[in-house]
Length: 142
Image (cartoon, rainbow, N blue to C red; front, side, top):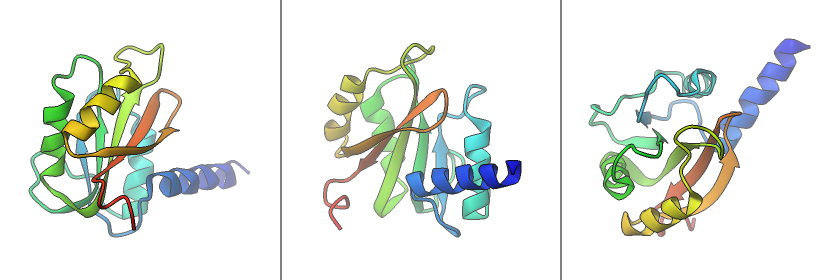
């Protein structure tokens, strides 16, 4: 029963993030506080390791761990766009309210358009992290 529950949870995470086998996923903002189970589930679904910030390959999805105090969100989002494929998605992962490093949703709403992005949805990614889906406005309408 435990394995079934785990498999269902993994499928749920994969469907919420839109990850598919063979996709390239780049990770920004890795630190000791990231959710390692989430990272493992994503890696299992894509069939490879997450790419780090230094990789220059074109990627399908960016997972960006962002905390209050990490710097300028607009500049960081623009850096994340550098390798993102047409129609790609940035998942901005921020600590939930009440957790160290929490980022106010208004900060994301202000920064996204300046970086040329549009927030399309926000989900509870894990127990400690919220995920905001960011896309280029033209790629969000398929």
